[in-house]
Length: 107
Image 1 (spheres, rainbow, N blue to C red):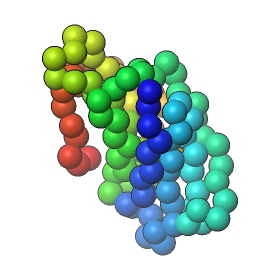
Image 2 (cartoon, rainbow, N blue to C red):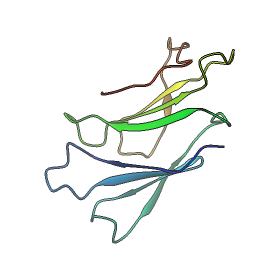
Image 3 (cartoon, rainbow, N blue to C red):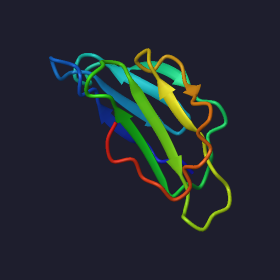
């Protein structure tokens, strides 16, 4: 199952915007975690993945990438998702079909 993930918005000059992925729903805060708001609920995210990453673009506030990868010898592949509106909607990145066994180190 997907584990919860927390990511800071590295482009926020105040350093108070964070994103939290809990299973298939993204939550966000703009006040350092004092209040949280429900954002996008994801499509059919894969279960039993080896690596899940939520990455923020350090150059653009509200620009997130959600990566699911499986074990290197698993035959299934997973979609890459891009969020450009601060976590309100997930959009699958077309043309990216091979994330099997990969980790993203930076955006």
